[in-house]
Image (cartoon, rainbow, N blue to C red; front, side, top):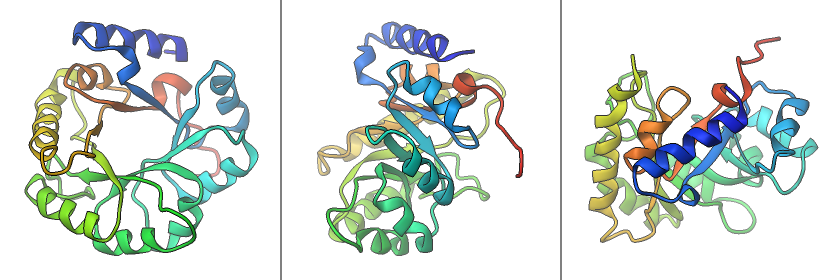
Amino acid sequence: MSYDGVMARVAGAAERAGRSVEEVTVVAVSKTMTYDDIMSVYEQGHRDFGENRADELAGKAASLPADIRWHFVGALQSNKVRSVRGVVALLHSMDRRSLAKAWMKGHGLAPPVLAQVNVGEESQKSGLSPAEVVDALTWMETLGLEVRGLMAIPPIPDRPETSREHFRTMRRLRDDLIGKHPNVVELSMGMTDDFEVAIEEGASIIRVGRAIFGPRNTTGE
């Protein structure tokens, strides 16, 4: 796969769903990728990139173009907030009070966040259970967070269609929330193996790494 190939598939999925391709933000997940790897995608006009390690993000943000919109898409420890908060346009993984309190500290407005939902209720994954989301949004907003929507990483699918019901659950959850929380509009869901199904089910943000960049660089890991 390639960047152009992914974007063509995004456009096709949006068309099938009767949506505009402009409704879908593609986050190119660049973890382990080199400066040159990222610049090759940047030079094709792409600006949204995602990282899941605080130190790696900080290093890349310091050396890459300033107009990149960085997304933090992994679990974030409270003691790493400082290195992420001043860099990202959006945090995808807000899921607990201690992280929310740390996120609100510091100079200037805290970047907006997405509430992470453990939609498959898997014990090894972070995130709020679907039943916890309503109460969580209340305390997040009370603490001052700007919550823009929801993020989910469903169970690894054996085929793309396997993820569809999880994506539908996320869409229904967002739709139920939006009356009392009108800013909660984004749905970050879908990755390399299932992003087309996610778009068909209402994703506004997809997180795609391998299909854009190829296999991960594991040197030194």
